[in-house]
Length: 432
Ligand SMILES: *[C@@H]1O[C@H](CO)[C@@H](O)[C@H](O)[C@H]1NC(C)=O
Ligand SMILES: *[C@@H]1O[C@H](CO)[C@@H](O)[C@H](O)[C@H]1NC(C)=O
Ligand SMILES: *[C@@H]1O[C@H](CO)[C@@H](O)[C@H](O)[C@H]1NC(C)=O
Image 1 (cartoon, helix red, strand yellow):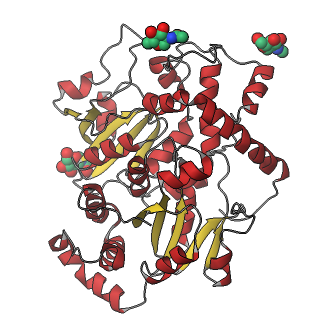
Image 2 (cartoon, rainbow, N blue to C red):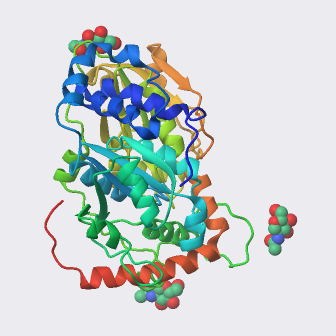
Image 3 (cartoon, rainbow, N blue to C red):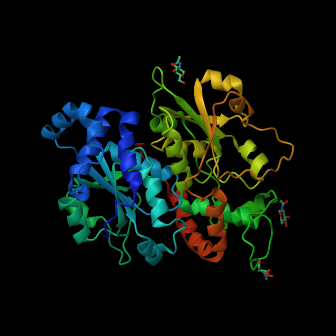
């Protein structure tokens, strides 16, 4: 396992710094203890003065019961709410969650090229509200040596994995060692979405335009055809799944913070599609959150997104996009299906102090005669443009997949087979 250069990755420190605003004293404790363990060892605590008022809790915890540390790993390529939900469940099995992010090289060797780079995947995973620490460049399969370093250096108590079997190329169970050591726990697989399914959705949005295989222009189609049943089935054999996702109120509650803005809080509002939730989204949400005490995020509904970006969008449905945003540690609340225009009434209703918008936006300007959706906050002098920290966009992520169509199609067809079998054979499993 390669170690990560934290000096050059300010986001992790910032992430720790921002815990207290979001989660209160107990979480700070976890963060500080995390910093004092071997992985972060030797660094001291960069923002210690900030923690002084909480030191009482810190000491009580430190000299009281030792926190239970759990480990879960994954590729987290095209990270979605299914990954987020798995990590939420893993966190519930302990006090501190350490997440291993598999290296680019290991993904290439085992599954083919990842869509997102290590750095992008790290930003996504670290941005989740349930994650306390990340280990970069984790191995694809847990070797005995890596398992020992988890137990001894990282002080991990349990290794967590989903209930789907994970076999090594030689047919043996990847978690046999951990199971034998009695330090393995299982969580239920999250239904409804997989990276395979998302790649399938993107590829079928290209296929719908009926362009030749050898076309070398990787732009997304402007006007896809609507598929009839036969076509839909064909495209499903490419790995595009009909969505199995059923948004339940309980899932939304599980992802929510359940707290409103405190008295005198400065509420910041940002809106958008947040389609194919990516590292650029995490960074803009973090910047927006830093401007106030409470971040309210408006998620545009599917029709609004189609109207402004083209009918092939959004790739993820409204409730899927909402869960991805809710899972982000910088977000306090979301509006599921926010209006396109930020009205004065909305600003009053939510006591919004500041409306922000990123410089990298994906409005294709399909509706030429549009009125400015930010006219009201602008006239009130509470609008601000935020420099988008990353140039990555939903389109650029989709383009990477389209540019490598053949590779992903092949990989997807293979995965889709096992997905199909899973859904055909599946039985009720309790748990959430
Ligand atoms: C591929 O793209 C290049 C540059 O955009 C263009 O000049 C060329 O004609 C294209 N080739 C085909 C086969 O479309
Ligand atoms: C669906 O579309 C395909 C291709 O355009 C066509 O051949 C087929 O007849 C259509 N099926 C139905 C049921 O409309
Ligand atoms: C509304 O927000 C402002 C900060 O912009 C804050 O001072 C005020 O207390 C808030 N109002 C309520 C009722 O919370």
